[in-house]
Image (tube, rainbow, N blue to C red; front, side):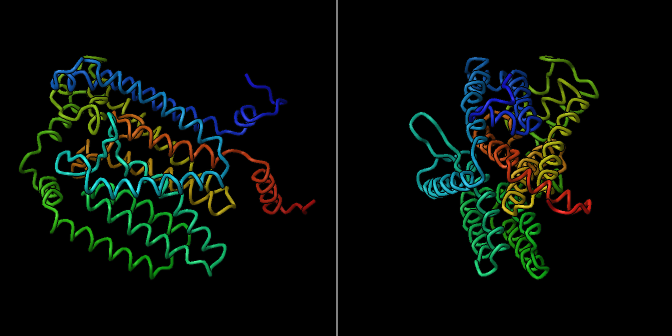
Length: 384
């Protein structure tokens, strides 16, 4: 145990970090590894790989991802902005390269091969995009003569255009939802709400008309006709799990779900551990979002408030989309369940998000002074 009287980077970090956040992130990573044992062996065997191939790789990805999360949590808010700027610039450049030299998987170019590794740049773009947009919104609020809102709109347009070009409409909707929520919290005028809402609706309708795979998924969702094998099988796994599940390793339906270790790991959890376990999992994600918004509500610094809100909403909306697809409440979309699904890029990028959240919610002397000042003003106590 680190003593309170010690002074040093590690001691300061330990006593200022939000330990409930940290425990929750590590808990989700542990649940993800456990579910990897349940979901991935059948997929590995279908690919003629060692039964625990994906389990080993999942564990291999966890260690550096955890190191990234802890390392980023030491940063100050200014350092978070600088790191986000570097990550955003690098990821946008790689997203351009993906369109020309990227690996094509299931009709989309989203992966960049670097040596023996494959990286999905859009995963790393998301947390950096949220932080930089939060900074732009905050700067405009602090100094209205700075066109921060305009720059944030342009940045969103660039990110959305690169995602649609891959094409990846799901990620576009994800960052669009979070960006819109941040803009609203930053004081978006009603005229902007109407204009951007109309543009978003027009863009979605345009994607339906021009992107065959988008139209196909929406049509299958609405009519139930066509190739719905994966979502139907996922639903069957959930139903078979009932309240308490079939037990660890006893799942049968999971063996025929093609993406059981990634996009449909929630269905595997339902079959083997039951609906109650899944409700607990949903509650954990809900706790992350609510705790983050609670931190943001107490913040007087606009950048910290908007960045923390955007980052926790990024986790919350992504988990909502994944779970919604598993429950057939949303059209099929390949999106991982944060810190649970298999995937090196996804896990590392989510740990970048978690590291930023931990860094921005640390208790710092200036933050404690602001909180005392706020308490005194609410209580009517005169300033010292």
